[in-house]
Amino acid sequence: MAAQPQGRARVRRAITELLRTVVQVLALFLLLSALIGRFEIHQISMEPNFHEGQRVIVSKLDGIWSSLFVRTAQAAEIHKRSPFAPHRGQVVVFNPPAGEGDALIKRVIGVPGDLVELRNDGVWINGQLLDEPYVNGQATSCNSACAPIRLDADAYFLMGDNRSSSLDSRSFGPVRADAIIGRVVMRYWPLDQIEIYR
Image 1 (cartoon, rainbow, N blue to C red):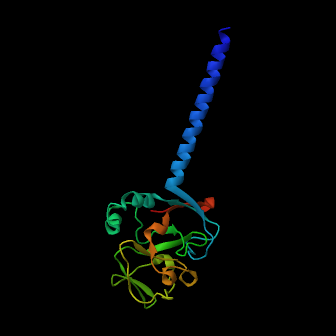
Image 2 (tube, one colour; image 1 turned 135 degrees about the vertical axis):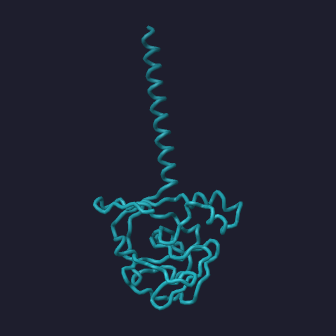
Image 3 (cartoon, rainbow, N blue to C red; image 1 turned 180 degrees about the vertical axis):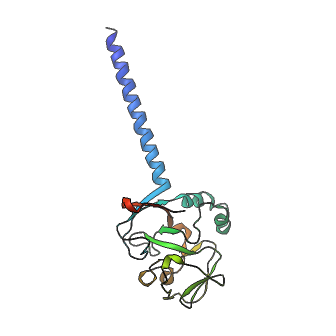
């Protein structure tokens, strides 16, 4: 008779352990989903550096950092303090300004406080011509944003590497920090093109 209660106790322990494991796996999944995102590229605006069908991992840490501290400090101070804020030259994924359609992938050209000018087929940041090896010698036209733009404390100027085929800040203007989902930290597909980005 003593074997039955012991058998029930073992079953209860096994069920408890299984439930605990399920909760831990779910918590880990939710944590990772909050910190990173996975995106498939559906655009040609970043060629030749990123192509349609490639998949990337995006770090969402800056968005989390900003949402925790933006209420207690000015946005300009947030970007100076945040080690996760996008830097010039990094590639980011963001929600389109109109809020319609899929997320876009572009390169950070101007950061808060910068004076961005598009002239003489190049990009000028704070009066200095920006060295852009990632555009492979393509000229940069100004589209509709031709006047110099001073970025405010919470704005980024984003452009595609394929300048002739990119809808970007030259058309829709600077992008607010809260629209940026995160920066690309890794290309993981196809497997023969895996690359990690800083």
